[in-house]
Amino acid sequence: MKSPAFDYIRARSVAHALEAYRDLDGEGVYLAGGHSVVPSLALRLQAPAALIDLSGIDALTGISLDDGWLRIGSMTRHAEIASDPLIRDHARLFHLAAPHVAHPAIRNRGTVGGSLSLADPASEFPAVALALRAELEVAGRDGIRRVKADDFFLDIYETAMEPGEILQAIFVPPVRTGEVCAFDELARRRGDYAMVGAAVQAVVEAGRLADISIAFFSVGNKPTRAGAAEAVLRENAMNDTAIAAAQAALDADLDPSDEPQMPASVRRHLARVLLGRLLGHLGTTA
Ligand SMILES: Cc1cc2nc3c(=O)[nH]c(=O)nc-3n(C[C@H](O)[C@H](O)[C@H](O)COP(=O)(O)OP(=O)(O)OC[C@H]3O[C@@H](n4cnc5c(N)ncnc54)[C@H](O)[C@@H]3O)c2cc1C
Image (tube, rainbow, N blue to C red; front, side, top):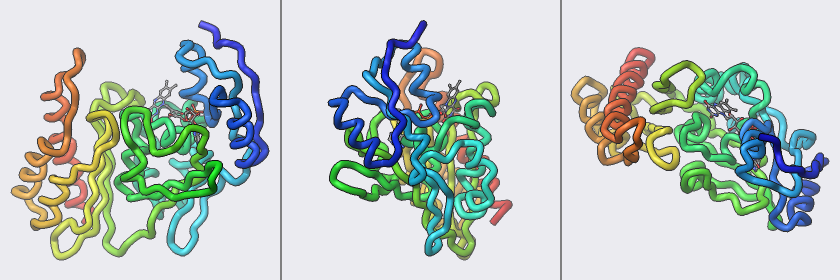
């Protein structure tokens, strides 16, 4: 199918993009890498009056360190996320997750900001932002605010951003001494959306995984912290018994729906298997 006709506006600044969106009276759509927007136009899932291109806005680019926090501009492409040394050293989960996102052609255009704004529950980066306890900088008509990743993802394709707001940057907290992390997903084929995936980060302290965060994706309507499993691992020394208890605790944490191609019981099983693998990996790197 062909896209419906639309105007194209190349925004010069965040203020220009916000103004263009306001002038379109709800009929504008921001364009980042276009790898979700453009297919949705071709499928006629939406018919905006205009696309407002964010790719010429310098303020949305760049990767830099400020007082230990890593700032990642929202227009950073998936391929840069995979290769940038600052991301490898200061936001390692993004580095580990990026090669799992789609295929090289998509990673060359798709942006981290587009992925987080879209909030597809099957996407890797929203779960990574949760596990990293990142903060998301959002610009709107009333100024700029920072939203914790825990409060950002509300439901399927729904975030805490108001219509017309722009995700400017992702801020990742400073790396702590003894920090370890692991990322993996189970997909039918490399490059496919995952059947189940998870990102884990913790600080190793006296044989325990202190301050652990576990974020699952593709298991429910939004990326999900596994709070009950985290509590088991925070409170017990890391050994086979603790891993088994954390796997069992996932029943309380995850609420996958029954789907014709995959019953909820299978997804729960895959989540337990994946958590076991990730914790085993942390055990060997700790
Ligand atoms: C064949 C195929 C396979 C894919 N596989 C995967 C996969 O395995 N894992 C995965 O995570 N993704 C996958 N994707 C999606 C891909 O990663 C997209 O690039 C990504 O989801 C959206 O990023 P984008 O930059 O292309 O955003 P766009 O498509 O340009 O925009 C996506 C949405 O976010 C909004 N938006 C974009 N940037 C901002 C911003 N800064 N502030 C506010 N709103 C904004 C847009 O208005 C739009 O609603 C796949 C895509 C394709 C086509």
